[in-house]
Image 1 (spheres, rainbow, N blue to C red):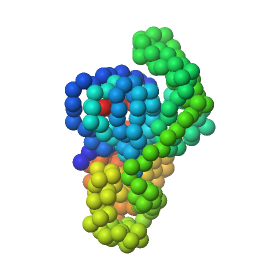
Image 2: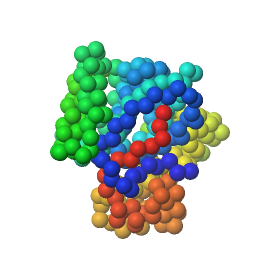
Image 3: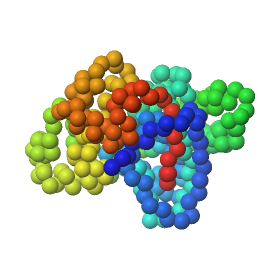
Length: 277
C-alpha cells in the first residue's frame, strides 16, 4: 500500500499537463504528495475526494489541493472529460501570505467569466513555454503567481461534502490526536458508533482502513520533523506517535519508499507527475 508520491528527479518546480480522456480508465487510488496540485476541469464532470470531503466539479471549475492531503479523482457516470493539472511546489510562489491561503480548504472555485478567460490565457502560456527558454523558471513562476492572485481575488467557492458532518468531525479529531495513542474502539466510543460502522466509514470515505489513515498522518508529520528539526530518528518516531523505532521505519518506508534516514538526507522540494484522471 504505497500512496505517497515523492519525486526523486527534479524536472521543474512547475509542471503543467492538459489531457482529454475519451475511454474509461481505472480510478486513481487515494494518494498524497508533497507539492500543490491545481486541477482545472475543461469539459465533462468529475468528483475530487480530498481528505474527508468529496467535491463535484463542472466545466471551468477548479480545485487547489495543498501538499500532504489525501486525495483522488472519482469518475462520474459519463467518464469522458478534459482537464488541466498544474503541479507546483512552494519555491514557485514567493509570497508567504499567498501560500498560507492556498493551504486552506478553498473548496471548488467557480470563476466569473472575466477571471476565467484570464486564467485560461495564463494556462496556455504555461503550456506553450519551453524549458529551454532563457529565464524559464523565473518566467513561469511569475505567470503562476499572477494566475493564483487572479483566482484568489475572484474566489467563488462551493463546498459540497458528501461524507457528512459527523465523519468530518471524526477526521478532524483523528488528525489532531493521531500522534497520541489512538484506537478504532476509542474513537468509535467517543462518537457513539460501533467499531464496525466506523471502520466502514473510513473505507467508504477515504479508501483507507482506520490504521492506514492514522499511519499516513503520522508519516506526514514525521516528514516535517525530518526536514525541519535537528533531532534523532528515534525522537522523530516518538513525536510522530509510533510506539517503537522498528515499526516507524517499516511504515515510513512502506508509504514513502524511503528509510527515514534516507529521506532526511535526500529531502528537497520537487514536483513529479502522476497517472491522473
